Image (cartoon, rainbow, N blue to C red):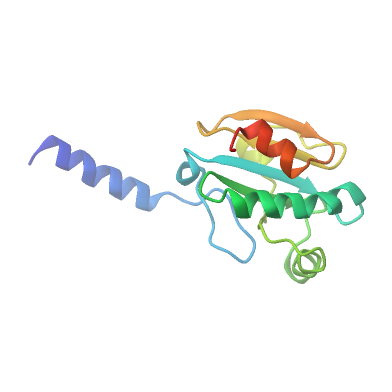
Length: 147
């Protein structure tokens, strides 16, 4: 058997056995490896945080406009789940995926003390920016140089 073909088969088996490391609420879970080559924008938010709520339309717009270049994900700081999380996502018109588990365990950052906080993971899978406070669509686009 050809070594290249054997390696391809081994890689396919290994990849198909990999477990998703990003658990997404009411959507398909993701593997960070699948997102390699895209920016990952992870935003911590809560319903008691007015700047967080004002930021949601900006994140929705960013995700919609640049979906082939990035993936925007939210994480509810209060660890809401099930009906409570569903109701808040609906109430605030969230159009991006919401993570079920805190991503800091995967990426190795500390739990934010203040909200909102946005983490930008580069196309290489490494943390590039931590942005404290509310972000605008224009500011994120400029930072990511997606225009």
